[in-house]
Length: 484
Image 1 (cartoon, rainbow, N blue to C red):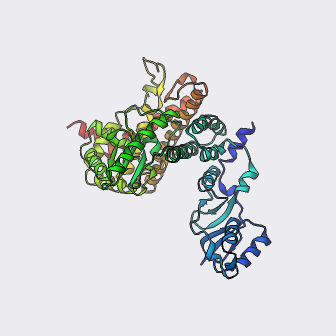
Image 2: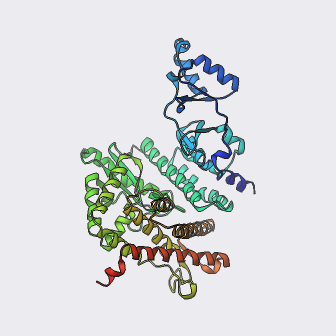
Image 3: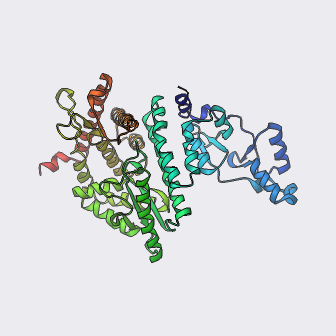
Protein backbone atom coordinates (compact mmCIF):
# COMPACT_ATOMS: atom_id res chain seq x y z
CA UNK A 1 0.00 0.00 0.00
CA UNK A 2 2.46 2.71 -1.17
CA UNK A 3 -0.04 5.57 -0.90
CA UNK A 4 -0.68 4.82 2.76
CA UNK A 5 3.02 4.71 3.55
CA UNK A 6 3.52 8.03 1.77
CA UNK A 7 0.75 9.69 3.76
CA UNK A 8 1.99 8.26 7.06
CA UNK A 9 5.36 9.94 6.54
CA UNK A 10 3.63 13.31 6.78
CA UNK A 11 2.30 12.54 10.24
CA UNK A 12 5.75 12.31 11.81
CA UNK A 13 7.36 15.25 13.63
CA UNK A 14 9.50 17.73 11.71
CA UNK A 15 12.39 16.94 14.06
CA UNK A 16 12.66 13.48 12.48
CA UNK A 17 13.32 14.90 9.01
CA UNK A 18 14.91 18.36 9.28
CA UNK A 19 18.64 19.00 9.07
CA UNK A 20 20.13 19.62 12.52
CA UNK A 21 23.46 21.08 11.37
CA UNK A 22 22.62 24.65 10.40
CA UNK A 23 25.24 26.99 8.97
CA UNK A 24 24.82 30.44 10.50
CA UNK A 25 26.49 33.83 10.20
CA UNK A 26 26.48 37.32 11.69
CA UNK A 27 24.46 40.11 10.07
CA UNK A 28 27.70 42.11 9.82
CA UNK A 29 29.39 39.53 7.57
CA UNK A 30 30.17 40.85 4.09
CA UNK A 31 28.14 39.40 1.23
CA UNK A 32 31.20 38.07 -0.60
CA UNK A 33 32.33 36.20 2.51
CA UNK A 34 28.78 34.93 3.02
CA UNK A 35 28.68 33.62 -0.56
CA UNK A 36 32.01 31.83 -0.02
CA UNK A 37 30.64 30.26 3.16
CA UNK A 38 27.56 29.01 1.29
CA UNK A 39 29.78 27.60 -1.47
CA UNK A 40 32.05 25.84 1.01
CA UNK A 41 29.13 24.05 2.65
CA UNK A 42 27.11 23.68 -0.57
CA UNK A 43 23.99 25.17 0.98
CA UNK A 44 21.12 27.15 -0.55
CA UNK A 45 20.44 29.37 2.46
CA UNK A 46 22.14 30.68 5.56
CA UNK A 47 20.53 31.54 8.90
CA UNK A 48 21.52 34.84 10.51
CA UNK A 49 22.15 34.97 14.27
CA UNK A 50 22.60 38.19 16.24
CA UNK A 51 23.32 38.18 19.97
CA UNK A 52 22.47 34.44 20.02
CA UNK A 53 18.98 35.18 18.70
CA UNK A 54 17.44 34.35 15.31
CA UNK A 55 17.63 37.49 13.19
CA UNK A 56 16.94 36.45 9.61
CA UNK A 57 17.75 34.26 6.63
CA UNK A 58 19.40 34.74 3.24
CA UNK A 59 18.76 32.40 0.31
CA UNK A 60 20.35 31.95 -3.09
CA UNK A 61 17.26 33.61 -4.54
CA UNK A 62 18.03 36.73 -2.49
CA UNK A 63 21.56 36.77 -3.88
CA UNK A 64 20.29 36.31 -7.43
CA UNK A 65 17.88 39.21 -7.09
CA UNK A 66 20.56 41.40 -5.56
CA UNK A 67 23.03 40.76 -8.36
CA UNK A 68 20.34 41.56 -10.92
CA UNK A 69 19.41 44.83 -9.21
CA UNK A 70 22.53 46.13 -7.42
CA UNK A 71 25.72 44.83 -9.03
CA UNK A 72 27.70 48.00 -8.25
CA UNK A 73 26.99 47.86 -4.51
CA UNK A 74 27.61 44.23 -3.66
CA UNK A 75 31.24 44.64 -2.54
CA UNK A 76 30.28 47.05 0.23
CA UNK A 77 27.11 45.37 1.42
CA UNK A 78 26.67 43.11 4.44
CA UNK A 79 24.28 40.31 5.26
CA UNK A 80 22.12 42.76 7.21
CA UNK A 81 21.38 44.64 4.00
CA UNK A 82 19.60 41.76 2.29
CA UNK A 83 18.52 39.28 4.98
CA UNK A 84 14.81 38.50 5.36
CA UNK A 85 13.76 39.32 8.92
CA UNK A 86 10.15 38.13 8.72
CA UNK A 87 11.11 34.52 9.34
CA UNK A 88 8.62 31.73 8.68
CA UNK A 89 9.36 29.16 11.37
CA UNK A 90 7.96 25.82 12.46
CA UNK A 91 8.36 24.02 15.76
CA UNK A 92 10.32 20.79 15.77
CA UNK A 93 7.35 19.01 17.36
CA UNK A 94 4.90 20.01 14.59
CA UNK A 95 3.83 17.38 12.08
CA UNK A 96 5.44 17.28 8.65
CA UNK A 97 2.28 18.13 6.75
CA UNK A 98 2.30 21.59 8.36
CA UNK A 99 5.69 22.24 6.79
CA UNK A 100 4.15 21.45 3.39
CA UNK A 101 1.36 23.94 3.99
CA UNK A 102 3.68 26.69 5.18
CA UNK A 103 6.00 26.33 2.20
CA UNK A 104 3.12 26.33 -0.25
CA UNK A 105 1.30 29.21 1.44
CA UNK A 106 4.32 31.52 1.59
CA UNK A 107 5.99 30.31 -1.64
CA UNK A 108 9.26 29.57 0.12
CA UNK A 109 11.83 26.79 -0.12
CA UNK A 110 13.28 26.93 3.41
CA UNK A 111 11.74 26.69 6.86
CA UNK A 112 13.66 27.54 10.01
CA UNK A 113 12.91 24.93 12.67
CA UNK A 114 12.76 26.09 16.30
CA UNK A 115 12.35 24.29 19.61
CA UNK A 116 9.75 24.95 22.31
CA UNK A 117 11.75 27.98 23.47
CA UNK A 118 11.84 29.42 19.92
CA UNK A 119 15.59 28.74 19.72
CA UNK A 120 17.18 27.46 16.49
CA UNK A 121 16.75 23.70 16.18
CA UNK A 122 17.39 22.97 12.49
CA UNK A 123 16.33 23.81 8.95
CA UNK A 124 14.07 22.16 6.42
CA UNK A 125 14.09 22.62 2.65
CA UNK A 126 11.72 21.59 -0.10
CA UNK A 127 14.46 19.19 -1.20
CA UNK A 128 14.10 17.39 2.14
CA UNK A 129 10.40 16.93 1.44
CA UNK A 130 10.97 15.74 -2.11
CA UNK A 131 13.56 13.30 -0.88
CA UNK A 132 11.00 11.38 1.20
CA UNK A 133 8.20 11.41 -1.36
CA UNK A 134 7.08 12.98 -4.59
CA UNK A 135 3.44 12.02 -5.09
CA UNK A 136 1.68 12.06 -1.71
CA UNK A 137 -2.01 13.02 -1.72
CA UNK A 138 -1.01 15.80 0.67
CA UNK A 139 0.25 17.69 -2.34
CA UNK A 140 -3.38 18.52 -2.97
CA UNK A 141 -2.53 21.73 -1.18
CA UNK A 142 -0.30 22.70 -4.09
CA UNK A 143 -3.15 22.05 -6.48
CA UNK A 144 -5.39 24.28 -4.37
CA UNK A 145 -2.82 27.08 -4.31
CA UNK A 146 -2.47 26.94 -8.10
CA UNK A 147 -6.18 26.49 -8.98
CA UNK A 148 -7.24 29.16 -11.47
CA UNK A 149 -10.99 28.53 -11.64
CA UNK A 150 -13.83 27.56 -9.34
CA UNK A 151 -14.42 24.41 -11.40
CA UNK A 152 -10.82 23.35 -10.74
CA UNK A 153 -11.33 23.86 -7.02
CA UNK A 154 -14.46 21.73 -7.16
CA UNK A 155 -12.52 18.85 -8.74
CA UNK A 156 -9.71 19.19 -6.20
CA UNK A 157 -12.21 19.10 -3.33
CA UNK A 158 -13.47 15.73 -4.50
CA UNK A 159 -9.98 14.26 -4.06
CA UNK A 160 -9.90 14.97 -0.35
CA UNK A 161 -11.88 11.89 0.62
CA UNK A 162 -9.31 9.55 -0.92
CA UNK A 163 -6.48 11.30 0.83
CA UNK A 164 -8.24 11.14 4.19
CA UNK A 165 -9.04 7.45 3.75
CA UNK A 166 -5.33 6.83 3.37
CA UNK A 167 -4.56 8.96 6.41
CA UNK A 168 -7.11 7.13 8.57
CA UNK A 169 -5.57 3.83 7.48
CA UNK A 170 -2.29 4.89 9.09
CA UNK A 171 -3.99 5.04 12.52
CA UNK A 172 -3.19 8.74 12.72
CA UNK A 173 -4.63 10.34 15.86
CA UNK A 174 -7.85 12.33 15.64
CA UNK A 175 -6.39 15.76 16.55
CA UNK A 176 -3.89 15.49 13.68
CA UNK A 177 -6.59 14.40 11.23
CA UNK A 178 -8.92 17.29 11.99
CA UNK A 179 -5.97 19.68 11.91
CA UNK A 180 -5.16 18.40 8.44
CA UNK A 181 -8.77 18.87 7.31
CA UNK A 182 -8.75 22.39 8.75
CA UNK A 183 -5.65 23.28 6.74
CA UNK A 184 -7.29 22.02 3.55
CA UNK A 185 -10.60 23.73 4.20
CA UNK A 186 -8.93 27.03 5.03
CA UNK A 187 -6.72 26.90 1.95
CA UNK A 188 -9.70 25.87 -0.19
CA UNK A 189 -11.90 28.75 0.96
CA UNK A 190 -9.10 31.31 0.79
CA UNK A 191 -8.26 30.28 -2.77
CA UNK A 192 -11.93 30.55 -3.72
CA UNK A 193 -11.97 34.08 -2.28
CA UNK A 194 -8.86 34.88 -4.33
CA UNK A 195 -10.50 33.62 -7.53
CA UNK A 196 -13.66 35.63 -6.84
CA UNK A 197 -11.48 38.71 -6.42
CA UNK A 198 -9.24 38.27 -9.47
CA UNK A 199 -11.71 36.84 -11.96
CA UNK A 200 -15.10 38.11 -10.83
CA UNK A 201 -14.33 41.47 -9.20
CA UNK A 202 -16.00 40.27 -5.99
CA UNK A 203 -14.04 41.13 -2.87
CA UNK A 204 -14.30 42.07 0.77
CA UNK A 205 -13.21 45.71 1.22
CA UNK A 206 -10.62 46.89 3.71
CA UNK A 207 -12.12 47.21 7.17
CA UNK A 208 -14.13 43.98 7.01
CA UNK A 209 -13.59 40.32 7.89
CA UNK A 210 -15.14 36.99 6.96
CA UNK A 211 -15.60 34.76 10.00
CA UNK A 212 -15.68 30.99 10.29
CA UNK A 213 -17.83 29.71 13.16
CA UNK A 214 -18.88 26.44 14.77
CA UNK A 215 -16.67 23.41 14.17
CA UNK A 216 -14.76 25.24 11.42
CA UNK A 217 -14.09 28.09 13.83
CA UNK A 218 -12.74 25.58 16.38
CA UNK A 219 -10.62 23.90 13.68
CA UNK A 220 -12.51 20.65 14.40
CA UNK A 221 -14.29 19.82 11.16
CA UNK A 222 -14.40 16.21 10.15
CA UNK A 223 -15.69 16.27 6.58
CA UNK A 224 -17.16 19.35 4.95
CA UNK A 225 -20.11 20.15 7.17
CA UNK A 226 -22.68 22.92 6.74
CA UNK A 227 -21.49 26.48 6.27
CA UNK A 228 -21.35 28.51 9.49
CA UNK A 229 -20.07 32.00 8.69
CA UNK A 230 -20.48 35.67 9.48
CA UNK A 231 -19.09 39.07 8.54
CA UNK A 232 -17.91 41.93 10.74
CA UNK A 233 -16.91 45.37 9.52
CA UNK A 234 -15.86 48.80 10.78
CA UNK A 235 -18.54 51.20 11.98
CA UNK A 236 -17.61 53.96 9.57
CA UNK A 237 -17.62 52.20 6.20
CA UNK A 238 -18.99 54.07 3.21
CA UNK A 239 -22.20 52.98 1.44
CA UNK A 240 -20.07 51.78 -1.46
CA UNK A 241 -18.06 49.45 0.76
CA UNK A 242 -21.22 48.14 2.42
CA UNK A 243 -22.50 47.25 -1.05
CA UNK A 244 -19.23 45.40 -1.71
CA UNK A 245 -19.71 43.45 1.52
CA UNK A 246 -23.25 42.40 0.57
CA UNK A 247 -22.05 41.28 -2.89
CA UNK A 248 -19.18 39.33 -1.35
CA UNK A 249 -21.41 37.68 1.27
CA UNK A 250 -23.95 36.52 -1.28
CA UNK A 251 -21.37 35.21 -3.72
CA UNK A 252 -19.15 33.40 -1.19
CA UNK A 253 -22.11 31.48 0.24
CA UNK A 254 -23.55 30.44 -3.14
CA UNK A 255 -20.13 29.58 -4.57
CA UNK A 256 -19.20 27.42 -1.59
CA UNK A 257 -22.48 25.58 -2.07
CA UNK A 258 -21.70 25.08 -5.77
CA UNK A 259 -18.40 23.36 -4.92
CA UNK A 260 -20.02 20.95 -2.48
CA UNK A 261 -20.25 22.74 0.88
CA UNK A 262 -23.91 22.67 1.99
CA UNK A 263 -25.83 25.67 3.24
CA UNK A 264 -26.41 25.93 6.98
CA UNK A 265 -29.84 24.55 7.82
CA UNK A 266 -30.21 27.26 10.47
CA UNK A 267 -29.26 30.00 7.98
CA UNK A 268 -26.30 31.10 10.10
CA UNK A 269 -24.32 32.37 7.13
CA UNK A 270 -22.65 35.57 5.98
CA UNK A 271 -25.33 36.38 3.38
CA UNK A 272 -28.03 36.46 6.07
CA UNK A 273 -28.32 40.08 7.33
CA UNK A 274 -28.66 38.67 10.86
CA UNK A 275 -25.05 37.44 10.59
CA UNK A 276 -23.51 40.47 8.88
CA UNK A 277 -22.94 43.45 11.21
CA UNK A 278 -20.58 46.23 12.16
CA UNK A 279 -18.25 45.69 15.11
CA UNK A 280 -20.47 47.81 17.37
CA UNK A 281 -23.58 45.91 16.29
CA UNK A 282 -21.87 42.59 17.00
CA UNK A 283 -20.90 43.79 20.46
CA UNK A 284 -24.48 44.86 21.12
CA UNK A 285 -25.84 41.53 19.86
CA UNK A 286 -23.45 39.37 21.86
CA UNK A 287 -24.14 41.45 24.95
CA UNK A 288 -27.84 40.73 24.50
CA UNK A 289 -27.21 36.99 24.08
CA UNK A 290 -25.11 36.98 27.25
CA UNK A 291 -27.38 39.05 29.46
CA UNK A 292 -30.48 37.16 28.33
CA UNK A 293 -29.45 33.50 27.80
CA UNK A 294 -32.75 32.24 26.39
CA UNK A 295 -32.72 28.88 24.54
CA UNK A 296 -32.52 30.71 21.19
CA UNK A 297 -29.77 33.04 22.35
CA UNK A 298 -27.68 30.19 23.76
CA UNK A 299 -27.80 28.52 20.33
CA UNK A 300 -26.68 31.72 18.59
CA UNK A 301 -23.94 32.38 21.12
CA UNK A 302 -22.72 28.77 21.05
CA UNK A 303 -22.10 29.02 17.31
CA UNK A 304 -20.59 32.51 17.40
CA UNK A 305 -18.35 31.81 20.39
CA UNK A 306 -15.96 29.77 18.25
CA UNK A 307 -15.56 32.42 15.55
CA UNK A 308 -12.21 33.19 13.97
CA UNK A 309 -11.21 35.42 11.07
CA UNK A 310 -10.64 33.40 7.92
CA UNK A 311 -10.18 36.37 5.61
CA UNK A 312 -9.86 40.10 6.12
CA UNK A 313 -9.20 42.33 9.13
CA UNK A 314 -7.68 40.00 11.74
CA UNK A 315 -7.91 42.52 14.61
CA UNK A 316 -11.69 42.09 14.79
CA UNK A 317 -11.18 38.57 16.15
CA UNK A 318 -9.34 39.71 19.26
CA UNK A 319 -11.62 42.72 19.73
CA UNK A 320 -14.74 40.54 19.75
CA UNK A 321 -13.16 37.95 22.02
CA UNK A 322 -12.06 40.60 24.49
CA UNK A 323 -15.56 42.05 24.54
CA UNK A 324 -17.21 38.66 25.09
CA UNK A 325 -14.83 37.64 27.88
CA UNK A 326 -15.40 40.94 29.71
CA UNK A 327 -19.17 40.74 29.21
CA UNK A 328 -19.54 37.20 30.60
CA UNK A 329 -17.35 38.16 33.56
CA UNK A 330 -19.93 40.77 34.49
CA UNK A 331 -22.93 38.44 33.95
CA UNK A 332 -22.51 35.30 36.05
CA UNK A 333 -26.10 34.19 35.36
CA UNK A 334 -25.04 33.58 31.77
CA UNK A 335 -23.06 30.44 32.65
CA UNK A 336 -25.98 28.72 34.34
CA UNK A 337 -28.22 29.56 31.37
CA UNK A 338 -25.75 28.14 28.87
CA UNK A 339 -25.03 25.07 31.00
CA UNK A 340 -28.76 24.34 31.41
CA UNK A 341 -29.11 24.15 27.65
CA UNK A 342 -26.01 21.98 27.24
CA UNK A 343 -26.92 19.33 29.82
CA UNK A 344 -30.23 18.69 28.06
CA UNK A 345 -28.25 16.75 25.45
CA UNK A 346 -27.62 13.55 27.34
CA UNK A 347 -25.69 10.60 25.90
CA UNK A 348 -27.74 7.62 24.60
CA UNK A 349 -26.68 5.32 27.40
CA UNK A 350 -29.20 3.23 29.31
CA UNK A 351 -29.04 1.00 32.36
CA UNK A 352 -26.09 -1.38 32.58
CA UNK A 353 -24.35 0.51 29.74
CA UNK A 354 -26.94 -0.33 27.10
CA UNK A 355 -26.60 1.79 23.96
CA UNK A 356 -29.87 3.53 23.12
CA UNK A 357 -30.71 3.89 19.43
CA UNK A 358 -33.24 5.94 17.48
CA UNK A 359 -36.66 4.24 17.65
CA UNK A 360 -38.10 5.57 14.38
CA UNK A 361 -37.39 7.64 11.31
CA UNK A 362 -34.72 7.42 8.64
CA UNK A 363 -32.01 6.81 11.25
CA UNK A 364 -33.89 4.10 13.13
CA UNK A 365 -31.50 1.76 14.93
CA UNK A 366 -28.64 4.28 14.88
CA UNK A 367 -26.95 6.64 17.32
CA UNK A 368 -26.37 10.37 16.73
CA UNK A 369 -22.73 10.92 17.72
CA UNK A 370 -23.00 14.70 17.53
CA UNK A 371 -26.18 15.10 19.54
CA UNK A 372 -25.26 12.26 21.89
CA UNK A 373 -21.77 13.39 22.77
CA UNK A 374 -19.77 15.74 20.55
CA UNK A 375 -22.11 18.70 21.10
CA UNK A 376 -22.11 18.36 24.89
CA UNK A 377 -18.32 18.00 25.06
CA UNK A 378 -17.48 20.90 22.75
CA UNK A 379 -20.00 23.30 24.26
CA UNK A 380 -19.46 22.22 27.87
CA UNK A 381 -15.68 22.40 27.75
CA UNK A 382 -15.93 25.64 25.77
CA UNK A 383 -18.17 27.14 28.49
CA UNK A 384 -15.77 26.32 31.32
CA UNK A 385 -12.91 27.65 29.19
CA UNK A 386 -14.82 30.88 28.61
CA UNK A 387 -15.25 31.28 32.35
CA UNK A 388 -11.45 31.06 32.58
CA UNK A 389 -11.07 33.73 29.88
CA UNK A 390 -10.11 31.23 27.19
CA UNK A 391 -11.45 31.57 23.65
CA UNK A 392 -10.10 30.09 20.45
CA UNK A 393 -8.45 26.76 19.73
CA UNK A 394 -9.75 23.22 19.62
CA UNK A 395 -11.57 21.40 22.40
CA UNK A 396 -8.33 19.50 23.06
CA UNK A 397 -6.49 22.83 23.42
CA UNK A 398 -9.08 24.16 25.85
CA UNK A 399 -8.96 21.00 27.97
CA UNK A 400 -5.19 21.22 28.19
CA UNK A 401 -5.29 24.86 29.26
CA UNK A 402 -8.01 24.18 31.84
CA UNK A 403 -5.92 21.37 33.27
CA UNK A 404 -2.93 23.70 33.46
CA UNK A 405 -5.11 26.16 35.42
CA UNK A 406 -6.17 23.31 37.78
CA UNK A 407 -9.78 23.69 36.64
CA UNK A 408 -9.85 20.08 35.38
CA UNK A 409 -8.39 17.20 37.40
CA UNK A 410 -5.91 14.67 36.03
CA UNK A 411 -8.60 11.98 36.02
CA UNK A 412 -11.21 14.13 34.31
CA UNK A 413 -8.69 15.37 31.75
CA UNK A 414 -7.87 11.82 30.72
CA UNK A 415 -11.50 10.71 30.59
CA UNK A 416 -12.76 13.76 28.66
CA UNK A 417 -9.83 13.66 26.24
CA UNK A 418 -10.38 9.99 25.49
CA UNK A 419 -14.14 10.46 25.11
CA UNK A 420 -13.89 13.38 22.72
CA UNK A 421 -11.06 11.83 20.70
CA UNK A 422 -12.91 8.55 20.20
CA UNK A 423 -16.17 10.21 19.16
CA UNK A 424 -14.40 12.46 16.63
CA UNK A 425 -12.35 9.57 15.26
CA UNK A 426 -15.38 7.29 14.95
CA UNK A 427 -17.48 9.99 13.29
CA UNK A 428 -14.75 10.77 10.76
CA UNK A 429 -14.14 7.12 9.90
CA UNK A 430 -17.85 6.45 9.36
CA UNK A 431 -18.29 9.63 7.34
CA UNK A 432 -15.42 8.65 5.05
CA UNK A 433 -16.93 5.23 4.45
CA UNK A 434 -20.31 6.82 3.70
CA UNK A 435 -18.82 9.32 1.24
CA UNK A 436 -16.71 6.68 -0.50
CA UNK A 437 -19.95 4.74 -1.06
CA UNK A 438 -21.48 7.75 -2.79
CA UNK A 439 -23.71 8.93 0.07
CA UNK A 440 -23.79 12.15 2.09
CA UNK A 441 -21.79 12.15 5.34
CA UNK A 442 -23.70 12.41 8.59
CA UNK A 443 -23.40 12.02 12.34
CA UNK A 444 -25.21 8.70 12.83
CA UNK A 445 -23.62 5.31 13.38
CA UNK A 446 -25.22 1.86 13.55
CA UNK A 447 -23.80 0.12 16.65
CA UNK A 448 -24.39 -3.24 14.99
CA UNK A 449 -21.67 -2.35 12.45
CA UNK A 450 -19.13 -1.73 15.23
CA UNK A 451 -16.76 -4.30 16.64
CA UNK A 452 -17.14 -5.40 20.26
CA UNK A 453 -14.15 -3.23 21.18
CA UNK A 454 -15.63 -0.18 19.42
CA UNK A 455 -18.96 -0.60 21.19
CA UNK A 456 -17.13 -0.82 24.51
CA UNK A 457 -15.16 2.32 23.64
CA UNK A 458 -18.39 4.08 22.67
CA UNK A 459 -19.91 3.25 26.05
CA UNK A 460 -16.81 4.61 27.77
CA UNK A 461 -16.98 7.78 25.66
CA UNK A 462 -20.61 8.35 26.65
CA UNK A 463 -19.67 7.82 30.30
CA UNK A 464 -17.17 10.62 29.81
CA UNK A 465 -19.98 12.83 28.51
CA UNK A 466 -21.97 12.03 31.66
CA UNK A 467 -18.92 13.03 33.71
CA UNK A 468 -18.89 16.43 32.03
CA UNK A 469 -22.63 16.84 32.62
CA UNK A 470 -22.02 16.14 36.32
CA UNK A 471 -19.22 18.74 36.34
CA UNK A 472 -21.51 21.34 34.75
CA UNK A 473 -24.36 20.54 37.17
CA UNK A 474 -22.05 20.95 40.13
CA UNK A 475 -20.08 23.96 38.89
CA UNK A 476 -23.13 26.02 37.95
CA UNK A 477 -25.50 24.59 40.62
CA UNK A 478 -28.07 23.57 38.04
CA UNK A 479 -29.95 21.32 40.45
CA UNK A 480 -30.63 24.29 42.73
CA UNK A 481 -31.86 26.35 39.79
CA UNK A 482 -34.21 23.54 38.70
CA UNK A 483 -35.82 23.40 42.16
CA UNK A 484 -36.45 27.12 42.47
